[in-house]
Amino acid sequence: MKVIDLRSDTVTRPSAAMRAAIAEAEVGDDVFGDDPTVNRLEAVAADRVGKEAAVFVASGTMANLIGVMTNTRPGDEILLGDQSHIFNYEVAGSARIANVQAHALPNADDGSLDVVAVAAAIRPPNIHAPRTSLLCLENTHNRCGGAAIDVETIDGLAAVAHENGARVHLDGARLFNAAAALRLGAERLAQECDTVSFCFSKGLGAPVGSVLCGSNDFVTEARRNRKLLGGGMRQAGILAAAALYALDHNVSRLEQDHANAQRLAEGLRDIGPFAPNEPQTNIVIADVLQGDLDSWLAAFAAAGVLAVPFGPARFRMVTHLDIQDSDIPEALARVAQAVGAHAAA
Ligand code: TLP
Image 1: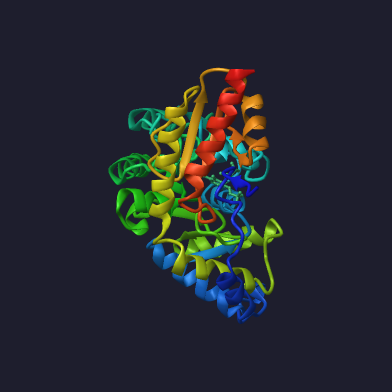
Image 2: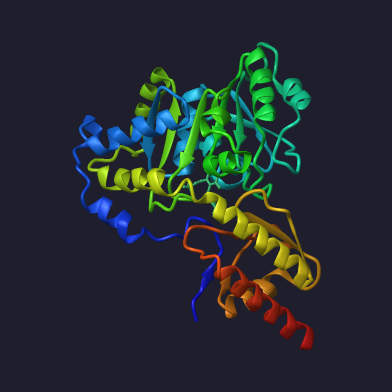
């Protein structure tokens, strides 16, 4: 039985063509700035999001941590959503390593933050207070069901941060999914943000890697922080080649993942004891209305459908480029069978 792995869009395996690009990559020592493939990737990536420069890093977590470190000073405060990846899933790196204090504001269901709440949270200069130096946004928003946050909202939040002397970092791990859903360029979505990160290892199907983009001065300093974290890589061109291949071949197909997520959510709704979101991109989040989450996940897994828990009574399924259109009805049939077996028991 073929396992239909919907745990994340990180589970993809490099295609034969991507492996060929990796095998053929020209390489050098990137810490010396000598790797031509990394240099090309950084230039292409910066251009794709409309920034002057980019630095290639190992992961989305590292990109965000270096983003926070480079945009702040120890003892500063950052504002971010209480559902954000940085606040929930990055092992408190911003507290432990960047030495900043996180002030979490409630994310709305659509992944946005309230502009009035952001303005109110930015502290005026005062000898007692930390400096609020950075606002972190996320698009698409993972825990808010892959929500694509519209450009007016991003621009409005960035404007309020800038008016009050704070910078803006955008965690764009799935920025190209947001761009596809909103039918806008990724560079437009990131335009008012000072720095933006995005990942090649999620919807784009590369095995490793993310980039952190911003001004030339920012990226020069970010490279120092990458070295500090042990993230200076040597013949990283073999990884950059996969990322370049992903940008060339796997961006234009993201809408297919979004259509599959919609079909998956509709099917789950019809099956019964689950209340899924209406996915805008490739992430389906479903509340479990009856029965126990762990038992459902175990029953799905026994039927060859993998999902992850995403709250006490909630699971997540993510579509990606290793999920064929025909896998969706098959996954739904298996889930329906598991539900039928549960009802009969
Ligand atoms: N998210 C992973 C898990 O950590 C939850 C996933 O499967 O979705 N920003 C966002 C918005 C992310 O969703 C992720 C990964 C990251 C940053 C971190 O990227 P990595 O895993 O490369 O460190």
